[in-house]
Length: 310
Image (cartoon, rainbow, N blue to C red; front, top):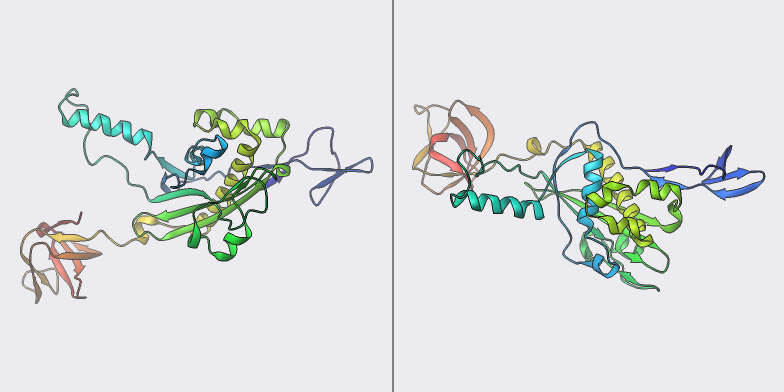
C-alpha cells in the first residue's frame, strides 16, 4: 500500500508516473508506505520467527518484533505472545502450581487464548548471488521455483530486500495466505518522511535497529509491503476460522453405542469401545452429538460418554 507523499518545496502542482514537475524540473516524488488499519479483528495471531537467523548478519532484531509492531498498529488481529511473554507467564503458572501464589490469584489452566493463525516472516530465496552481500531465505518449495529464482533476500550493495509472509491456519494447517514484499532505498523518503514513519512504536516493540540503519529501513518497508498485501488478501476471502474448521475430534471414555437417532430406543449403528476416535459433525440435540467414525459410519452418541481428543 504505497502513497505518494511530496516534500514541501520539491513539487507543488503536477505528478506524473511518480515524478513531479516544478519550473520545468522533474524530481522524484517521495514514497512512503502506510500500515493498513482494520475496522474489526480477523482473528487471533501468533508471530513466529523463521528457523534461519538471517537478521543477525545485519545486526538487526528478529523480524518477529517488527511484524508485531505492524500487527499492533493495524488492529487487524488480536496479537498473542508466544515468545518471552509466554515464557514469563509459564513461570507464573509454575509458581501457582507449586502453591507459591496467594489464594484467589486465578492463575491456572484453561485461560489462554488459542491462536487462529501463525504468521512466519522470512526472506525470499535466491539461488545465485550476482554481487553484494546477500542472504537467501529457507523457503525452497514453499515459494516455488519461479518466484524463488526471480527475487532475492537482502542485498547490501543495492539496498534492496525481498521478503515473504506466510499465514497458516492452526487447526487445519492450511496455508491461508502468502504475500511477498519488495523495497529498495529509492522507495523511501529518507528525510522527514522516513524519520516520521519510524516512530517510538519500533523502539517500544523491540525493533529499534530496523529504524536506525538504511538496510533495516529497507527490510522494514519490504515487510510492510508484504503485510499490506496479506491483509488485503485475507480480508477479501473473509475467513471465519472457527466456522471453517471441523469440530475437534473426541475419544470414547466409556463403552457405549452409536444410534441412528438421538434416542436410546433408536436403531443401534454400532458398539463403541473406550479409546475409539469419533468426529463430530456439529449437529447437537441436548446431550446428543452427531458423529462419524473412522469407517464412515454416522450416528448419535451421548456426549457424557466421550472427552475431547488431546
